[in-house]
Length: 451
Image (cartoon, rainbow, N blue to C red):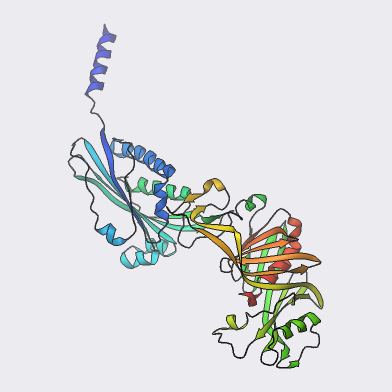
């Protein structure tokens, strides 16, 4: 009999417990000063992660049951449209709570101009690449505000094993974006939160492409440390140190007169083929460089026509009229290490960079859309060098405004290099035994007269 009474009392207590109020998300308003990142909110996996996080947080902090409806994403493309949009409640049921979420991305400089923060937070933001604001307004069924918090995530990128072309206006992969939103919601919905600015180091993000992706799996990314005019890196356990020296020039032919008696018959033939021997000067652009640890000195000589009537407005334009044919040289001491030709602005119909897709630079499964439209960019080469080095055929192809360079040996890709003025990092594809010849190709590719 006693057990029956206890059980009866327990049932009564359970049935008297108040039911959890539901909460609906009325809007997730988003805007980015940079543009593409907010499109991640259209991704079903990102939305699923947001709903899962909201369900946990609303139950934990407010004992609310999350209404698992589709998320009302409102992605704005202008500040005016954002200002003119007012949040609205979807119903009058007093048992239902309401949640409004805002996700904005700011340029740090603009953000600091408009805000007044304490010194430590300002320091964090000034060092960031992007600032995310996550705001949450939670009201009860009577539409009274229960919680209203905004928090900020200062995003900066860290170097990873990924490789490729880095966007200048996207700072998060899809996975990192979802993580930032979850962290922001965790802070903005926590009644006891006292943190205003979170310093977040996110993995680097890259554009997707159809020719570089996957090569990183066959080798590791090699980082190059630049100090003044020297490049140092470690490959296969060996340290390397390369140095770029002075940029000079040697006269070859000055208006009807041959000055350099060592000029090859091919070079003289190419000079005469221009038909400008009476008006133009022809010079070697000379770049000195050195392999420090191997104690090897190199000279790169690029044969160039200087037209006195040129309308060139800069040295870059003036010195870019390279002579055709394999008349350009890399000398090791007095010995010829390489000869090559230079072709400018050559397109490749088969290579694409997808400006509407991002990736972590390692895994094709990380590819995510950042636009409703497709933006395939056809690769064109700033220059292409072809010739012979140490008796083998080589090709160097520079693209993306000199940011990237592919290197081939006997028509086989051996390396891809990132860096415009100096190499920043690179991968050697498949065969690390090419490390020695790769050094000389780096010196050729990054001589300063090709920029």
